[in-house]
Image (cartoon, rainbow over all chains, first blue to last red; front, side):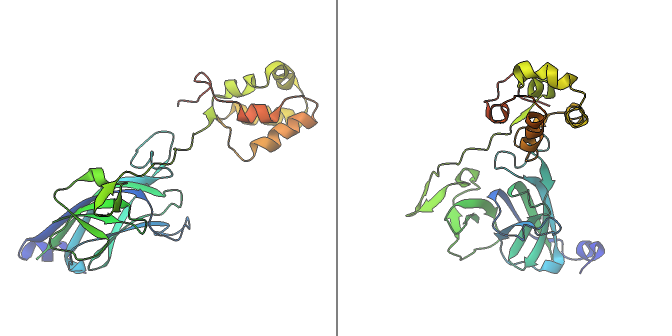
Length: 111
Length: 137
């Protein structure tokens, strides 16, 4: 795994990809003690997984109407992001109840 | 390049701006970053609307409204010194709201009936929620 000094001493940013995702989970274990209780796999252009950072802003909840809400009658949960391959960005919820997502993400690849 | 990603039911759940071309059958090219295709089905080269299932109602009511649902039995229940009845009353009073879909609720109401209070558990649980009753916290 590269560190930040490697990023910034290199050739700068190589690529930026971004997206919006909303809807029911496309996979997951449905276990409450699993970082992949609910998952959403997004296909991206190939990147070097050792030279990227992922920015995610959003949440998951139990209903489509509640996804993305910070407060309200429907609980909402944090969304995690990581690369599971050079072309797959996995967004996940540790809560089985977080079956619906609303999130924006950015994938920044450094040279 | 912009793409909508579709699930096995051909319904879009993600819109992505990529740094290069992606040649996958489930990645549908878009002319722009168009979020409006989310939730739509890709069929015969066009996006079509998909009927949305109704959002389940959250059936939470104020504690006072819950007791009001006992009708003329409310005061006898509140005044009942039986330990189990008092335990149920206190349990309700410390809550912010009563969730009518709480799986423990039918057993609690059955306990009141067995204690001699002729309430109608089905009506207490399933009567439509009025706007005055609905918990809005």
